[in-house]
Image 1: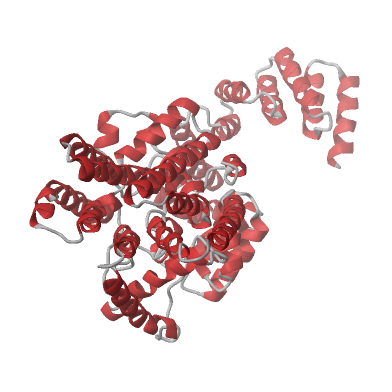
Image 2 (image 1 turned 180 degrees about the vertical axis):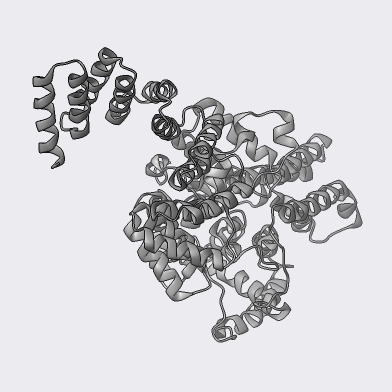
Length: 618
């Protein structure tokens, strides 16, 4: 609790937190159909969504509440690891330090401090409870505990399909307790393997349905590459667990000039040597075999056999559950040291890990801090640069965003999404020519999104290229026909070409989709006033004022419309309100001068006209 306390004030990440929480109708309207008959983010994880729904029901969109729930799940896993270790071996000291290191290690931060990583915690908790129930079954042979094991397993795979390895862990526990495996052990696991098969196959289906192409071989990686990558990853995680000084959200696996670095080619030999060593030691020291299997089996489905995306090759959260096996071995090996030495060593290690975990949890404050850390660790990674730029774009740090998008393109010109993002930053800074050039490059590179065509259409409208703007805006509407903002800009472009009736129709469509769309009311009112349809214009200005009564132009323009209808008293009230909001609003003084002239109050009209000239310079 002490290590993670400060992180409870962290916010939501736009990377998956938004999809998992903020835009996830499943958790906002939790029904059996929504939870158990739908997928989210390419995963079938109804128990995880149920946890999200519970927190949302209690606290709404409160990031602190979700972080607190994640921490409680982590604490549940820690206590279950402790209970398991006490059941599996005789030394309470081993159980204590294994659970302590598991609790405090900084590699656990990604799962615990990233709200979207909560699925790792949820499935791990039920996975560990299933192991604990099975140990009770082994020791007491009561059907109740067998049933609880199966129930925990089903809940675990319903939280995340990575839990499909639990039947193998149950066999590992059988071997650990008996020193061998019997046919009866396999027979008892048939229901578990059936569940594993069903959920494993369904996961491939949901990932493909989400658009994640699961490729074993590609132009980048062949089968031998995959073999090297798997072996290297098996050694990478223990290295990080032992010395977690350069943790990152992203760990690249890249060849240089088509060749891996030497450690990839050495990895199979080291893995083979370690496997042989475990094989020799395990019959006499079964805890060595259990530790190795506990590390390997939960991790086996997380290894880079296939490509979903380079970002998902390696991740700290993948080793969350497996780390318990590593810490069991580490703590057991420490028993060969004198008590004072091992207590001091393990205690100092816990303090160091706790400090690093605390610091790491602060890195997960938001998407900018996470990817700024990524850039510091991997400055030559275009992926880190691009994601940092995206985070900065969303946080309105436009100059920094442009800088990092530019660096991503320098490192890898094929990162064409950077043109789209950089164009948006230029657009927000009103650097329209540069924005348009980037949007052109993004579209030429084959990016097709409704927002991209909308943004290019905006630029073209602002640069007074209405015909080209209309072409882009129509394309955007083909891709997303229910975006009121696109209809707004299409209406503006139509009015720029002189097609005022077409503009009115587009503004009407925008208001149909969003009745409180302020800009649509204001711009339709302008067009209606130009067509001398003053009563309709007044209705739109009135609607705009009801939405936001602090806009002086709305009051001034409604005053002008009232004046054209000869309703001078109403016009005077409105223009006075505009000047109350902005006493230096030159156009309003000119409007009031015209109203006073219509009322025959020429002295007041002359005074307002002079004030208007002073403010407007004309």
